[in-house]
Image (cartoon, rainbow, N blue to C red; front, side, top):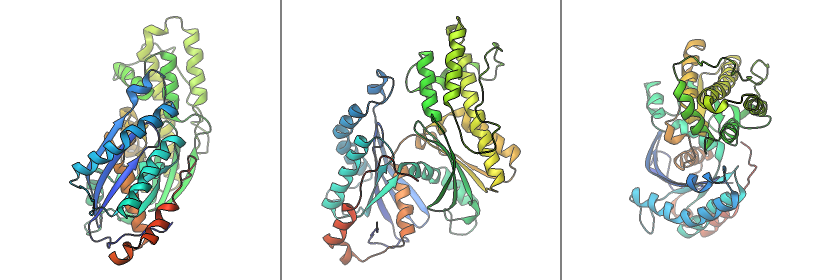
Amino acid sequence: MKIYVQKNIQQQLLILGIETSCDETAAAVISCKGDDVKILSNIISSQIKIHQKYGGVVPEVAAREHVVNILPVINKALAKANLFYPYNGLDAIAVTQGPGLITSLMVGVETAKTLAYTWQVPIVGINHIEGHIYANWLSPASKIFKSQTSSKSKIQNKSIFPVLILTVSGGHTMLVLMKAYGQYQIIGETRDDAAGEAFDKAAVMLNIGYPGGPAVAAYAAQVKDKEIKNQEIHLPRPMIYDKNYEFSFSGLKTALFYALQRDKKYKEKIPEYCAEFQQAVVDVLIAKTIRAAETLNCQTIMLSGGVAANKELRNQLDATVKTKLVGVKVIIPEVEFCTDNAAMIATAGYFKIRASNQTISKAVKSSLGQLKNNWAKLQVNCNLEL
């Protein structure tokens, strides 16, 4: 799909990002000029409290909430960025088109297409996983890029490539090799449950609440810096020694299930079980990442996805890379950019526009036919691949 923008990339571009792949209704506006990306607004309406009673996201409920929240969230994002009707300052709209829940995605995409047609601005479809990857280009990562080169080109510094991205969320767990901007190769992914899904299911077994990742982490933190007293609590590290870069967490989940069945007093040891389960996941993720980065001679390791907010994963990955891969850079987004948000989608849209190398005059931009072709081709794809 061709992307049309009315300005050269060395001029300021204002991009509206929209994200509705699961249960977060999000909109953001970013200002981009050359290599600099500045977040003007980043609004998120969460549905966590709504889905807590179900122990997981209910697609039909999520879609209805998106319908209610989408326009107010977009309006708030625009207002915070000092953009008001008729929104002549916007240069493009970036929206998540997949993967995700089909009914949730439809709300965001159809809204974005309607706005693109009405406002006569280009629209860019973004892969949700690619959005998470580009969260690494948001602050404070931008400061890291700036410190790596003395030239005016910061984000385009080629010394960061090849980059290995560990993407960990409720729906995905994969290792992605990024050789250049927009060039991705999935070198390994989960064969069954994603790490985030495993955390959710573990939390259900332990009856400690939803979402599972933060709940498990909170209980595990109670035994931080302490030797786990219950040495009989030991869970497997699935596929940790396998030569490939694939993951599997269903067996770990099953092992926890049987361990709890055997332990009649497990309710007294919930923090210890959480700590062991969390450490098992972290051990596997880090071991595979280190092995892949070393084999592929990667210059940079990045972390992305909702589970990237896990404190132990963040700290242990950083420490392990510094110990075992001296000279390899580690870039981890701020916690607020790890979970689903629209700033990362807008940023991915900016880089997609840059990669398209398309610039047109305002006269061509005003052609409704060009714009119609642009928005009309965008379709939802709940199984969209990176």
